[in-house]
Length: 386
Image (cartoon, rainbow, N blue to C red):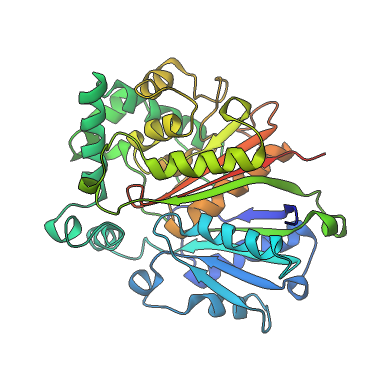
């Protein structure tokens, strides 16, 4: 298998944007190509991660649309859809194309345009990534799903919402330093607890926002990486796993087995373990999701992830900085773009270019992108290279 590297990375600002879906995708794609020092003529394949453009913007068949807008004449273009893990699944697809020797240069773009859709309708669209027959059809949307997980976690481990407060405050504090973040304002515990109840025990500040945005990376093989403007950042390991869509079909709802399995596969491929990771960008669609993720990824023992957040272990100066970008919670969650955006942030951190939020001494970066309530998970590990 060929070794794979990132030679270009870029993203748009996440949040409410006046730009259209195609404009967002083109902005990120062109910036990533410029970062790699190439033009459209060098790109041999486009992989596009996008969850539900057919319902958000009434447009399907979006991969060739974006390819055409980017000037990628006649290249194969493919869209991946895996709910909120659509972006990381696109990256996996691009990596496999490089690894197999099918292409030397693959452009991966993740994009979603969500804010032009009313909030209630957007929530219903997102709920289509749950089990329709047993969850969404009965009125259980994702805030409710993760609220059930939070209550189960609190009951199982004897915790209260202080751990959720700590995650929210940390996320927004990190977002202050990120020019790409939707929210760049610090908040307090009082702000979190005083915000609107969404689904008990989750308040407004426990939930990631509806967002627009795009992110893109240029992938190539290590043996041709010296042809590009930027040194390649290697993909050292990656893994993907699945699980039942419906929460009630799982034995335990205080962990996500797909994340555990995907991370084990990524660690094995990279030849390292959780203790080696310098930073992690995890899928904190809700504050409880970050706590569960830090345990599933092996950073903390089950039942201790919340305590770690409270004690500051997951802060930028902590033992394992989690979401220095602000995460989905503060950076924003344009669904198809989120997984690619995690990798863009990791590249910035590994290059030492994450101005305003840079973590010192980053050698290994992990990303964790989840679809639905954990039916899909993709984990990647990147390193600094030689």
